[in-house]
Each structure stands twice: as structure tokens, then as C-alpha cells.
Image (tube, rainbow, N blue to C red):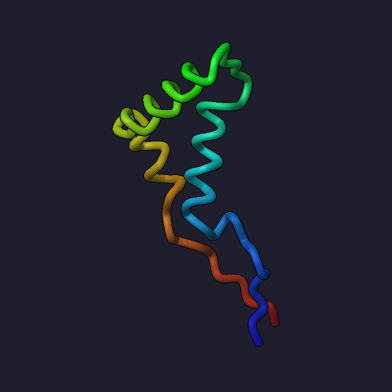
Length: 69
């Protein structure tokens, strides 16, 4: 019997990366034009080295296994 939830975003690494991206690019920011937003997105992905330490701890596959017995 599979007890895992049908969708678990915290277990999906791309969801974690997406959440990190939104935190850095979207939250609390306003872009006057789409071009500025697009540039911010491009800059984020181009500067991935700047986020190396944050992403290293965020994008890990070490999970605690919880016994459901």
C-alpha cells in the first residue's frame, strides 16, 4: 500500500527551485515593463553561481523517512 501523497511539491526538486526563483524574482518586486521582468529572469538564471550555497542546501535528496505504523 502506497502511503505517499498524490502530489508532494517539497519532494520535487524543480518545485523547490521554482519557489526559490519566485522568492528572488517575484515577491515584493514590481517590474514596470515585461522587458524588465524578462531581464530579471534572465539575470537570475545567468547568475546561478551567486545562489550556489542556498541552492545546495535547498536542492538535496536527503529526506527523513517517517514510519507510519
